Length: 139
Image (cartoon, rainbow, N blue to C red; front, top):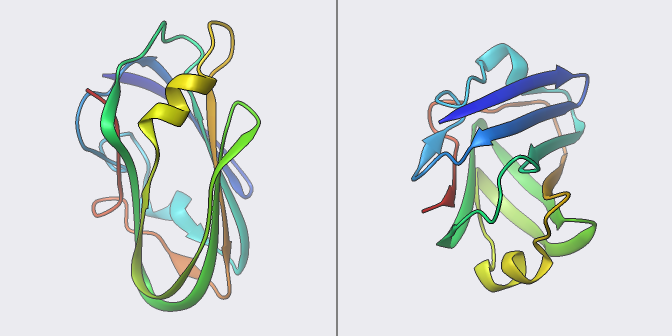
């Protein structure tokens, strides 16, 4: 597993050099608690898979985001190669689990650019927990 992390205000970019097989926590990916404090508003995470040729996606690609606070409704949207593949409101709790459609990812996958963008809208300040948040994209 190898990836490059870039942190910008309101945006995190994770570029995969090789597939991270199995469940990988945000901490495993190299993200720290300080980078995951989000003031109320928007967060954007870009998972750049451009360097991966024909990645084998897990049967149920998953993103789980856990936070310290018990939040009211949060809005989540996932885009893959410019197409919205998930748009949901999560109504209350300390975590959100996003299950992506493997078939949709495979249909949209191409040889030049493969980017999964996660947009989140939080109603208040949030502390995302890197050791409890994870991705599971590749098998």
